[in-house]
Amino acid sequence: MKVNVQKYGYLRKIYQADSLFSIQKLPFQAIEAEIQRIKKEDSDFLKSLDPKSYISWYLPIRKLVSSVSTVVQYRTEEIPATINAFRNIDYTMSGSTKADC
Image (tube, rainbow, N blue to C red):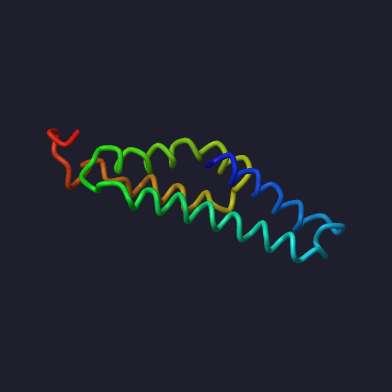
């Protein structure tokens, strides 16, 4: 899903920056709606996982780590939130035991 959000983020920047596209409100709104839909779908999937499972801890961490290069290169406005997310990682995998893994 990361690739889809990146593509839409690229389109969003084009529609904001280019005067030919900036007057087009309907496509811009559709791009924004699709970005939100993808993020919600991703969030809903993560919430549906068993909170005691290793995968429910691992996937958000993996997503955060894999997003770093994209955030630094293309979504610099997200750098403070990304740094904060790294600082707030719970390394204890609370709620899980080794038997659950």
